Image 1: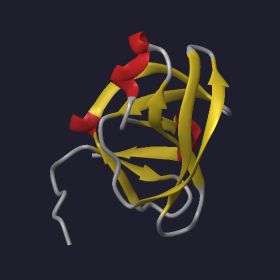
Image 2 (image 1 turned 180 degrees about the horizontal axis):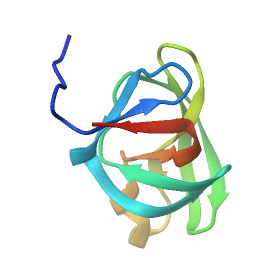
Image 3 (image 1 turned 90 degrees about the vertical axis):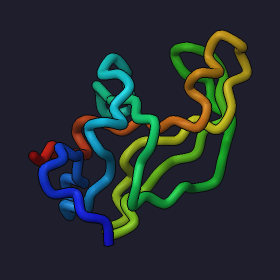
Image 4 (image 1 turned 90 degrees about the horizontal axis):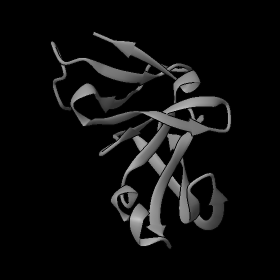
Length: 105
């Protein structure tokens, strides 16, 4: 098991499972189903669901919902593919809804 002591991280609000490190936070300027969301370059302890094409605010993407590996809570989604060349920087990154996580220091 990894040792995250001393590293700011984000946990599942429901079960406190570690989800993402502060160092992997790319942007705080995103929007999701429940409101504001963060874009992370990496997420841990998540299960990636089936991919589907979806039209979002910035275009059409292939995305997959992500779930907490401990309690199954839907946390956001993973960008699998961007169909617009200007949005490809999001591919492989994770949107995590602020309402679904708690920050821990």
